[in-house]
Length: 131
View 1: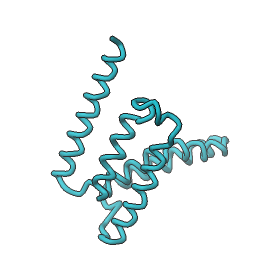
View 2: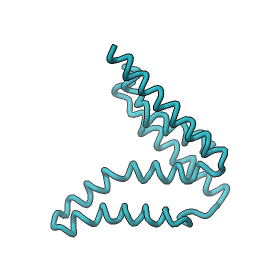
View 3: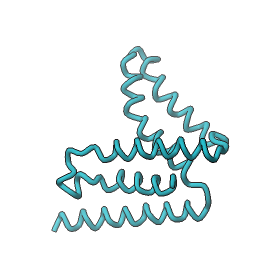
View 4: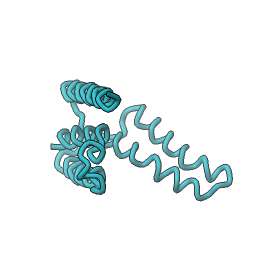
């Protein structure tokens, strides 16, 4: 179930439903999907506990996030830490969601294929808008 949430969330991030379907312009689709994916992700971790943050790149990612948040207050702009946190948190959420949801090589291949198809869709949509 979490893997399906990952795919739907990634597709919504790429396609931005409000730009494709004008009726969804004011609807916070991404926020709803984020909340649903968070609930499913927490439920998945509770039902099937597994190691997380055990890869070196996970620690590097956390360090990078900490550097982003700490760099502004370290330079004297204390409000910048909160702004940096707010700006980069969706990236952290997407990373954690993908890291939790994609658990096998087959799922990784499916995710990469989805990304390729979404990029083809965006390229085709851009070409159609030009002409």
